[in-house]
Image 1 (tube, rainbow, N blue to C red):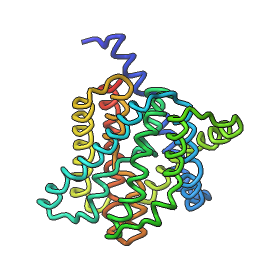
Image 2: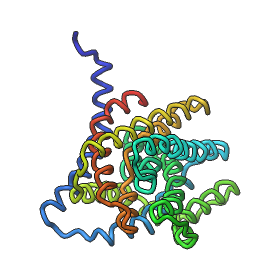
Image 3: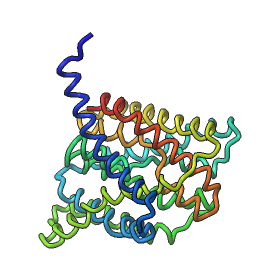
Image 4: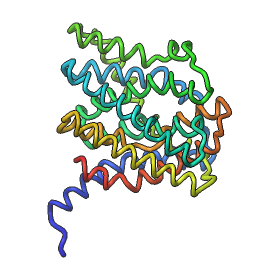
Amino acid sequence: MPISISSLAVLADTFGVIAPVLIVAAIGFGWRRAGLPYDNAFITTFAINVSSPCLVFSALTRLHISGAVMGDMAVAAAVCMGLAGLLSVPILLAARLSLRVYLPAMSFPNAGNLGLPVCLFAFGDEGLSLAVLFFAVMSVSQFTLGPALAAGRFSLGQMIRTPVVYAVALAVTMQMTGITAPQWVANSTTLLGNCAVPLMLLSLGVALSSLRLTGALRALSVSALRLGLGFAIGWMVVSVMGLTGIMRGVVLVQSSMPVAVFNYLWALRYDNAPEEVAALVLGSTLMAFFGLPILLAVVM
């Protein structure tokens, strides 16, 4: 059966989304493999404390959306993460897997390193802004509940030291009050925020280059569960909330992302079976790359 023009157009659009993501991540992967200098501590700290908050602030203040839309995205993000965690608990318990090790990986998708560029290339600037809303909610959760789950205790100090919390609060306040940022602030945050997506992808590639897939069958099984459960929950959320258009696509993409790299960083920091979490990050990311064409064919 000959391939139709419309099918070729979909394949071309899908490739246009996936190719930049793979290329930039592959540069980071190859850079580390080649032994070239890469200050991972600086890049990660800069991305967390400067470029990501600036991206969140600039994207939210540029997009003229109603409070209802912002509320819908916040609710959708919170429900997607909450349901992913709740529904995975009985599965993990039945499989006799540690909740402390595996629950953060199931709850927090890679809505930053991978989700933001995919949404940008798939849906444009509006898609990026909506994806940033999802990412902002997830970041606040991941920087508060993530360390608490990994360490077995909650740290109020960690939440207070999370810059993205203040970026979200300031941007939302400005949106609700109609205050416009001075041009120099807008230009500066936009410039710094533009660094976030390429830095995230480079860091993802660098992180993947040093991970090892140990316990392959277990890691791949849990990785498949993360991706499948994330998509199913995203589909349920957009259906129940009646989300359409770009918002529907963004929620489905972000909810379907693989295990976030920061889960590995928290596991490493708190000595919470980091090799197991690393295998989940690597396995789910590789599976996600192969599954992206299917996912994008559904949402685009």
